[in-house]
Image (cartoon, rainbow, N blue to C red; front, side, top):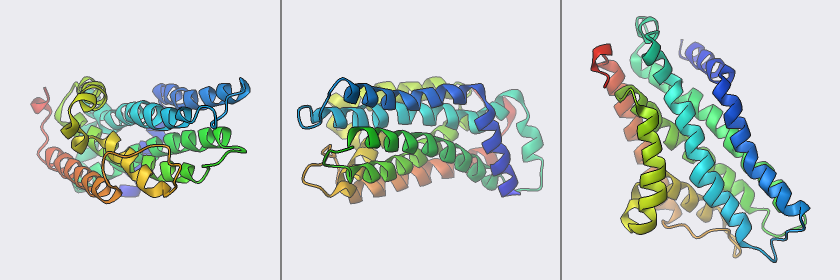
Length: 245
């Protein structure tokens, strides 16, 4: 039954009109990379461009926004229109429903973002050094996608305005406060993702310097993912339609 819910959730997410917009969002960094190369850009002359598009565009913007839209829709849409009643009425533990929804959101998000990283890497690093860093970022964004989707699925169960709360988290907490308060980086999925990519790159010409060690980032990301998943399971197990605010 879990596989059935996973498959149905994947089809629902892929068929949504908003998914096309997410595909265009994931394609935007690729278009910028192509424009950079077509106009004669070189990573030797402008080494910060690769770091900017990988870490500050894809990881800091495209990844969390994609995960937010997909994660809040995976279960939140059924909660909003009331069809969740038919799902939870089935003889299936609710924690399995949560895992299926997080899994579907993760697959969609990770596929879009990892594809974007791969295509950007192919465009930027053709004939250039540093191509080995592309797989490191691909692994990192797949792991980061899991953390984000678990977090946003949990938010969608607790709040009816999860999308707005998620936007505040992405733009205020991760993008703004992390620039001024160093401690915020220890509670930032984006920071975990960049730090994991930095650790996996293992190259003297790495694109970025992570704020955390690879081990610490991986442990914190795993802890956040587990906590968000547990909270989502707990909330759905005791869910009542009248509880949403």
